[in-house]
Every structure is written in C-alpha cells, then in structure tokens.
Length: 87
Image (cartoon, rainbow, N blue to C red; front, side):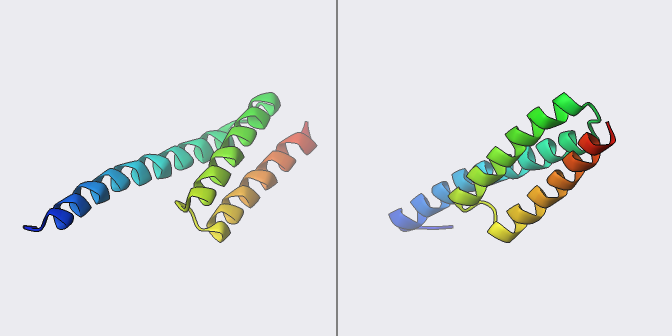
C-alpha cells in the first residue's frame, strides 16, 4: 500500500481516469454498434454524425489513437454509403 501523500493521490487520480476512459470506450462501442445495425437512412445519418463527433472528441483528448479513430470512422462511412446508395 502507498504510504507517501503523492502516491495516494496518484492512486485516486488513476482510478478516476480509469472510470472515465472505460465510460468513453463503452460509449464509442455502443454508438458504433447502433449505427451499424440501423437500416433507416435518416436514423443512420443522425447516429453517424453523433458517433463521428464523439470519436473525434475522444481522439483530441487522447483516449483514442488517431489511426484507431480513422479506422472506426472508415467502417461507419462505408456503411453509410452502402445504405444511402441502395435506397
């Protein structure tokens, strides 16, 4: 167990950051899954904008690597183009 004041503070801050990062990862997964499973054109466009926005914010804050974000956005864009082209 940590005995220094700074080590105790580090434990507390790491726990806070772990919870925030887990919440962000979970939200990204949920938004991506919702977008990919939807087939309604207007709903997909709305979810697409929301998901891309959240992915960009997470990347800016350092929660996601930029290449990971680009890969996720590419998958979403392909799905959006497929749905909008077929209908």
